[in-house]
Amino acid sequence: MSSKHILFLFVDGIGLGEDNPDINPFSVAHMPTLQQFTGGLRWLKTTPKQSTPQGAFVPTDPRLGVAGRPQSGSSQAAILTGVNVPQHIGEHYGPKPNAATRQLINQDNFFMRVKRAGKAAALIDAYPKSLLHNIARGKTLPSSIQQAAIASGQALFDDQALREGRAITAEWTGEEWRTHLKFADTPVYTPQEAGRLMVEISRGYAFTFHSHWMTDYVGHRGTVPEGVTFLERLDGVIEGILSVWQPDEGLVLLTSDHGNMEHIGDRHHTENDVPTLIIGADSEAFADGFSQLIDFVPRMGAYLGV
Image 1 (tube, rainbow, N blue to C red):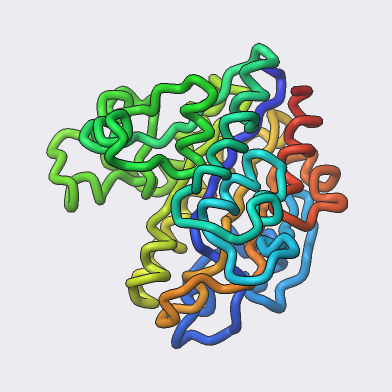
Image 2: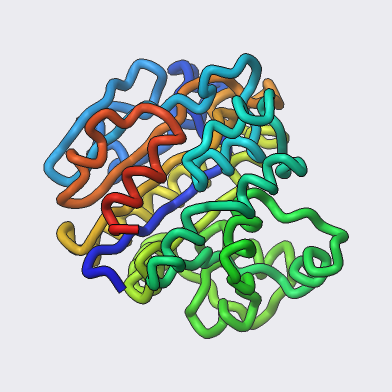
């Protein structure tokens, strides 16, 4: 493994919106850890690019020069391929990737690049065996993120990997696996514990990716208080990460594919910029010239030497 590594936190459907507590959870959520990267400012449309000794905050363009509302399938693929996928396929497309997007992902993506260089990479989300079975038999189409990991040769992690501490649930703490999926014996963590566990797992890979999707679900169907719950949980996860992450061991990256949850009640994606957070001693160099979702792959490749 490279002496430096990347832990990438993907948070679906969060954009930089108006300062309106009636529709935007970012206007009211208690996020002291995340806001330390923006000088105490809330994460809003007016929040500028900033650098601190710990990291950088960069409003990021998910539109990529294509008209319409960005969608998960094409935007997630853009993040992991470095290709302007919406431009290539002629539209923003989602939520799952279409055939043209899958072809791009299968040809080349960052998981594949890392592994071709002889380094280790993994999507560390755990999935119920029922979902993995449906993906395997073609009943459920993988997301662009899942497709990228699968194309690299990874077998997606299941509930056993979760129990063994080699994977973590999409919503970080595992609470929803107990309450909604009715697993009685899977682990439950505090947000801070989940953050520390992700750092521990990431030290076994050059590139570690975790995907959270419930913020997008809240944006489509939820409420402002539900959005606040997940943002405050995310803040705790980052707090846990920072408590054990050594600034010179690599980079922690956080971004999204499109806006949504910053405008509760609209039920559709927005065209807002999304937040990108870059944590680590090399954050300023990584952030230099960074402005779009397609900027991740070239910078990550140069950083890891792949």
